[in-house]
Amino acid sequence: MSAMDASFFNLERTGQLLHIAGVYTVEGALDFERLERELGERLHLLPRYTQRVVEVPFGLAHPTWEDDPEFHIRNHVHRHTLRPPGDDEQLSKLASRLFAEPLDRTRPLWELHQIDGYRGDRSVLFGKVHHAMVDGVSGVHLLSVIFDPSPRPASFPPAPAAVPAAPLPSWVAQLVEGVREEITRSASLLQRFGALVRHPAKLFAELAEAGDAVGEMLRLVVAGTPPTPFNGHVSILRRVLWTTFDLNHVKGIKNRLGGTVNDVILATIATALRGYLQEHGAQPDGMELRAMVPVNVRAASEGGALGNRISMMAAPLPVGIHDPLERLRQVRAAMGALKGSGQPARMTRMLEVVELLPPFLQRPLAWLNFQGAPVNTVCTNVPGPPVSLYAQGKRLETLVPIVPLAQGVGLAFAILSYADTITIGVNADPALVPDGDLVVELLREAHEELRALAGVEQITIRTSPVPPERVRRRTG
Image (cartoon, rainbow, N blue to C red; front, side, top):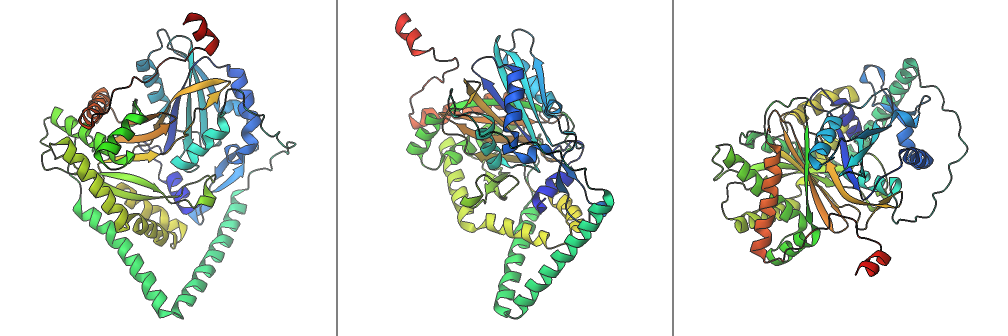
C-alpha cells in the first residue's frame, strides 16, 4: 500500500468507518444470478477485488495486498427486498444500515448489494468499497467496468485460465519483507539527502517547501472552526439521503451568475447550512464554516489506477452572508484564491513529509492530523460518467455518491455528475443531525433560489423510463 492508502486502512475506528459507497437506481428489475455471474466474469479486470489486506508485524511497513486463497464472489454479492411500496424512504433506511456496517477485514474490502422491490418492480444496486482501495476518481473509473456503456455492449475479454492463489504469507515472511523494505527505503532516503547536501540551494528549497507545508497546516489549526450542531462526537449510526438536480440548470446558473459548477454547488450547500443553523437557533450572520474539499492530483497517465491520489483544500463556506448572490460571489472568489494560492500543493507536500518517516511513526501522526482536521464538513465533487450506463440492458437512472464521516464531523456531502443530472449524496450521523430530511429540503430550496435569481427556466427531470420508440408512435 501507499502511505495514503495505508492511512485510510489504519485510521478506521468504531464510529469512523472509512469506506465509500454508491446507490445506483435502475430503470427495471435485475436478475440476481446473472448479476453475480457477470460480475464474476469481469473480476479479472479488477485483480485488487480478489485480494485482501495482510498487515506487517509491529507496523514496520505498510500492509500489503495479497491474493485471497479463499475468495468467493458469493461472500461479496448480497440480495435484499424492500416491502411494498418500496419508496425512497425505505431505500434510504436500508442504504443507511448497510453503510453503517464495517467491511470484513478477513476478505477483500468490497460488497455489492442488489435491492429489489424499489418503487414496486425495480432494482437498486448498493456498492461499498474501502477508501484504502479507491478514491472518488478511481471509483468512477470502476463504474465503466461494472456497468455497460450501452444496452447492447460488446463482450468483455475472457478471463485467463484460473490459477490457484498461493497461501497468504506468514507473519514471519511479512516481518522479514517489512524489514527489507524499510532498509531499502532508508537507504534511498539517505542517498537522496546526500544528493541534496551536495546542492545546498536545492536543500534549502526543499526545507522551505516543507516548512510552508507544515505552516499551512498550523495556520488552519490555529484559525479553528466555529461550533455547529453537526460537529461533535460521531456515533456508529448513519443516515444516507440525496437529492438530484438537472445538470443543465446548474450550468445555466454558473453561465449567468459566473463561476464553475463546483462553485454553484458549494454555494448551494452553504445556503442550506445557513438555513439549518437558523432552524436550530444559531445566529449564522458573520459566520464562516470550513469544508474539506479533496483535489485530484492524478497525472493523465494514472487515470485508471486504483488507490488514492488526492490532496486537500480547506474551502470557506460563507454561511454568514445573507444575500445568496453575494454568497455565490464569495464562494467563487474564495475558490479562485485557493487554487491560485497553491494550498493543494502545500497539502501534498505535507503528505510527502509524513511519508519520509518510518511507517510505525506515520500511523500516530496521521491519526493526530486526521482527528485535528480543522473543518466543519466535507464536500467532495467528482465528475461522473457523461453518458448513460446500463446494467443487464437497463439504464441506471441515478448515481448517488456517499463519503465517510470523520470523527468530529457529523455531516458530509458528495457530489457526482451523471449524464444530464448532478446528485448530492448526504451522509449524516443521526445523533448529531436528527433531521437529515431538513438538510435535503434546504438543498432543494437553495438550488431553486439560485435558479430563479439566474432566470434559468425550470425543466422537469425525467423520473420514469422513456417508452420504446415503437410504443411512442403507437400511442402518439
